[in-house]
Image (cartoon, rainbow, N blue to C red; front, side):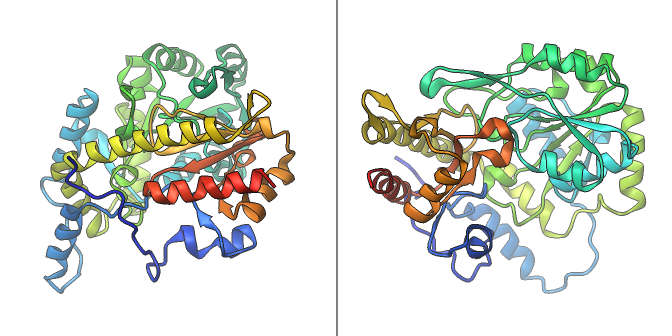
Length: 400
């Protein structure tokens, strides 16, 4: 029996939430059911709300210092959940992971140097370097087809060719992978580390979904797999996805390499970018100290939602013996990569189907790179009744 009610419909009206407030701007109409941006429609767990309320009762919000148990709490969580022993001097606050990517680009890369990304992948991995006038080069992932168990693997031959270019100085790794939810195995991460270390390529490992492995999978921190991985990487993490507190910016960086850390953290300190705002440590401590029962129940509900989507698609999106929409089962997180290529629609037709006919706001697969053509990214972190409504709207649209 569950302690928490994930079936509860939470009215987000008046909260200024991104997923509702920009529908007109981004999709051309405001009457859509939003299942796009990667936050959850579940209430933030009460321990966090109570901790924030307790601080708000002291109505003076001047300059503050980090609580003494801030980093020990984070370090203990990483050790207990991912078997990685992070030293206190390795870790610091950063004001957001995408911002952190931009900072690394500017601190470590000259303007004529390049960034490697593994498409299809979270689109700020491309947009942020390009916005900072760096060239982005592609190491596309290789599709491994097996119905709902389809996944991606890395193309190491092509990566080795790219890494030999002395201008390729940075690779941004999505670990676990967004949008397909791949939990990279140890062998894959070790091989990636060898290539990058041997060719002097710095790795940013974005591990924001690390605490959301499902269906028996286990996340492996990139920097933990070998000495080479530790010596060529910057890891970014946060409790924000797991505990639904993205609006409370609570990200952190971990850098084991002394030289890399001195350069990056020295720059952060000089610009005061590593000073956590007042509520970030409070929310982080509450989440990591008291949130484990909620996390486990939430992940179970997410698994059930994944299975619900799979069964619905098998039953309602099959024509002539062929399944038109195949949800790839994620190994981590609440994002489902919908393979819609069986509908035989081009880019504009697929978007028209979802937005104008089904009245749904999802992320267009091509946003993540040309390899995402024919896919849509579905956020299933919602009450099952909302998910059922969305799929029924899609079924009606497909049958028109």
